[in-house]
Image (cartoon, rainbow, N blue to C red; front, side, top):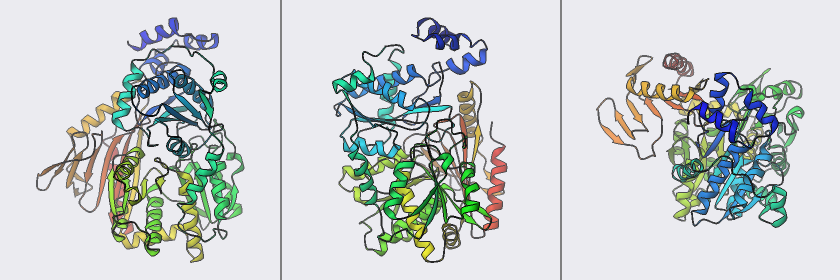
Length: 565
């Protein structure tokens, strides 16, 4: 079907309410119809994500139910436990969508466990493992603006679905009709026991398990923290962990309670400085040691440090390096580093982490973008009885994990480790910014930047695909006067040494990513976003001199921006 056929099909066949039917019929502009019906939501990055609204290219009761029905069909075709855990965040319709998913799964004979209130994404990952489920669902659009929501699907290991099972789920979704109505309400499913709420004791078990990842016994009572949950799920669990470690906490009141409108933070993305704007207003009067924020589903964390009359927000790479150095340093000093320890980062995260790992004799593995690939490395270790070798994992988009209790990034454990490190540094007369600069002085200035090109309109996917094809066909051999020494195409799964001409295979799965290496001076990574209509450039410039690294980074951004659509 084309978009007009899909539109007419919905007008004629969808069991819409009168209000919904009026809304659909009001789509008289071609762009409106194309935007809502020009495609079907793709099952990418282990789920669907999109703007809420009516149509095949929007998240609504019908697309959500169809996705859950496809997941149910896949689970029923496997020998996995016929159980599913479901969590949801503070976004509009999140609880409603969670209940729709629960009904779709329960009517296929699958036992469903649902959190009785909003809960962080890592708590769902934990619940999948603790309850012995064959799959899991989180209703969330992570850090996207309030117009978005999404359905993230998890496998039995508590990790977001990897490519192979995700492809099978997508096949099952595609074979599912849109308008198969539920046979019972959520309340009816609760009454007969096919759906039940997750027991509150699981919350305490999760807190206890997070606390096991603590690597100091010293109280953080000397640390003053200003915390914002950005109107999301972190308020309860993060503050509970802060209470347990003794940190003194003030909360940004206007962002304390759940709010799907995100009125004081239009784009609640921890990667952006704007996410902490409300915190900065308060911090100018209260002068905390540390500003910390977690995104709406509490799997990512942002950190800033007061510096004079201003603030320095650490990048995801910087906090990742600080936590990696802290974890490895403390475990090493305590004689608790496991034999043949393994840390994992995404390929778009800073190579500075490799140098930190090498200092402690730790193997650093680089995997594709997406925390599911870090979770996959933990699973490999677990399957060989060696999961204790995993010491830390992170990705530059502010996601971190210590421990194997969950298989997704966890802002709760990351917040704890960050505060413990900040408290330790304060006792030494330092702060996180000063510690980061000391690492730079020792290991080289790794200046990094992400350039995002947002694509608008109904043809966004086509524009993105054409850009990637054109870039592959015209790969630059030189940037900022520096030779490109190595080219990797993760889709073709080859790395080519541009000096010797030698080609070697890439062991990672296929992915629409291209990497250019500039000798020891940096790198450029190009990829389309897996969750948004964007093309992203990950730029790294390296030098022993900070000013030179910054100048190179600026030059790379200018040159590479010329390639963007």
